[in-house]
Length: 285
Image (cartoon, rainbow, N blue to C red; front, top):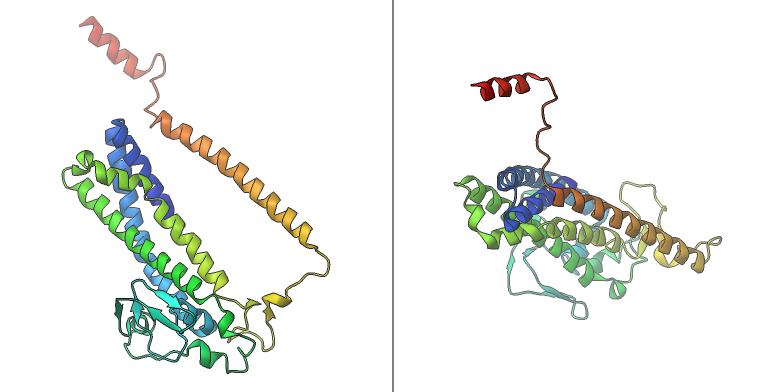
């Protein structure tokens, strides 16, 4: 994910130079390298994402059920988008691929998964109140992450195609502007991915995993410290936020300075070097 974000930051730098009409050759090289790295890293991400999905289905089945809005046992379809009606316990969407999520997770179109209602009847997940679960939030964050991945692939492919085919991207201002904002795509994907991971574990802050020791779990409502008060926790979070804002401002100033200065050319030859001697001979001629 960070390789993709870095690659798209490179795409944005190259696009900025093209929009400003500066350092065109350097911009084209930057865009080509960034696009290739972005595509390679995105393809590798498919493999790791699949393994993560399989692990979630095995270790945290309630999270998987919320990601797909499954209240009842079913072969999960693949939704492009939709809305979870938590009162009627169903996904409202005009489009879905039957068995699509099953195929992505198992390679078959008919693998059935338990829904939230049946999971809540088991001993391991009996502390879960289905009516209080943030199902729609997890569903939306997960599908927004998938949508951002689609934008990442499309943008990287466009950058490769139009930067290699005679450099047509030099005159395509709409694509340059798209590349300029493209780092937002992986950034948003990373953030909503974390929302899916952390909110999806509710109502546990320590999830009762399948392979973990029996009886090791902690409900969020019970995760109350006896030694750290609420004001102390709030102060700690505020200080963390202040430090990260300070670091971000410093990073932005340094990086913007490098970008404005542009690529650094080759250093001038030292006095008395062979280049100086060659230049002197030419002047004499």
